Image (cartoon, rainbow over all chains, first blue to last red; front, side, top):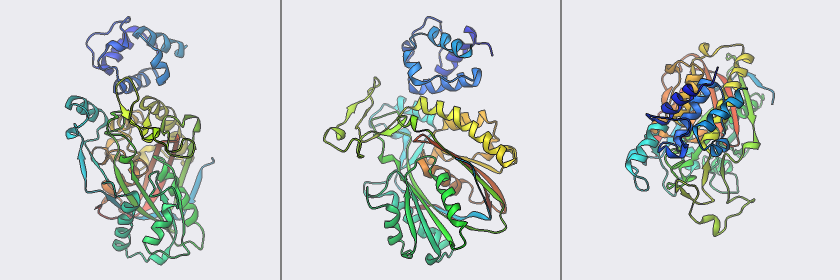
Length: 76
Length: 352
């Protein structure tokens, strides 16, 4: 499945219960970006893209764009 | 390892025991505010847990379950040839708790008794061992005692683990039943992931010390525990489950030449509601065939599969049934089985 910015933004909104998500947002700026939020995001990324992201990788992501790039790399 | 296949062996009777003492998680706001606690409970689905007091151990719970099992089924203690105790919360570092239980239950001195130290996969592993012994012509009954006081392993000030784990025990008899068909087991391990769920100190690698007993802040969220409490990397445990468990399930279904739809119940390790629901959705399981006790007992590690059978399937196992069992967790260790039962007798759960 193609990984588009729109799709990823929709997934992050759903996982972290957010109204607005931009590509340049820092993940740390979301109140719901904690271990429970990560679980939701892991599940939705698995469901939609069949890709898994480890905790270490998540620790290295700063922005939504970093997640997007990593998913595309894994999907290549 | 290669799969294990058995014919003419089954679980004939089961009983369970839990502590009377109940914690209602949403009211457990001693260390975290109501909103945080409520968010955790919404996600994990653990509304209540049974918690042992300081003096109540896994073996006490097992003893109560075993006595109930013996009296409800008129089992002669002299017929128990093997006793397998599964736990990672034993009474002592030595001797093995199984042997203490052999003495306390008044079983014959010719009983083979030993402990198995595994967590969430433990019951399925123990069943495979019990089935192997029960195949021997000279073995009459194998007694599995599976008990955990997992609530004592985790620190209440660590929100990642402090609201999930509970205590429980079961007793089960495994024996021959010549009319019963094939059961199959697949057992797996990945020790490269041993850091995902772990207690760092208190064993012989990092012995107990004044330092190992000190409370400390362990992450940026301010969670607190000592090195002698368990810790868990929830995200990577979830990744592990997503990667390995569905694959293992497909594998065992192929070997058994069956489909999920043709099995009667799917009993999964009760990790947490979020993970179990996602797994059921991914595998497209019929919800009516997935019994759950996560809301009332929480995650009881190796006991979660059998206590779910005892609590939820008590009156549903008349006649011949195919039970699908799947445990996964600390190790990492995972095991899947399809077990045939025939009029499996289940006792009421004892509260002590």
